[in-house]
Amino acid sequence: MADGKKDYAAITSAISEGISGLRGTGAKETLNQFNTMAKAALADGALDTKTKELIALAIGVAKQCDGCIGFHTKALKRLGASDEEVAETLGMAVYMGGGPSLMYAGDTWTAWQALKDS
Image (cartoon, rainbow, N blue to C red):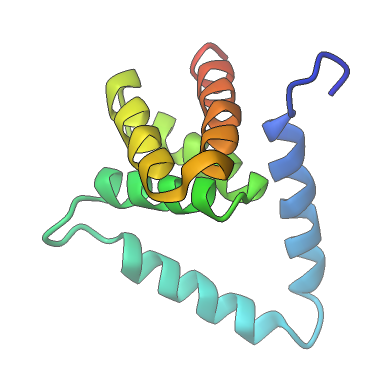
């Protein structure tokens, strides 16, 4: 973070490493159930997966969760989200969360742009 920007790839990598370590503990079944819940929540239904990922990104901004921002921007890139979709999602997060969400929306836009350009 020498340039003042968060390294979301490093953040998500470190989190993934920690989660992998947890899989070998008494938390294994909880993590398995969380994965099952995530798959069910993200499955296409009345809302498609990309829309659900945009909602998750907005919640990550509102909750000020760097890991959520990193994982959901990565998923949105894979799903073909546009700049406009991400920007409008961030606008809604700011509207609902005020100043703290604005700060995280700025970080999230930086993460989106860096990932998009990679």
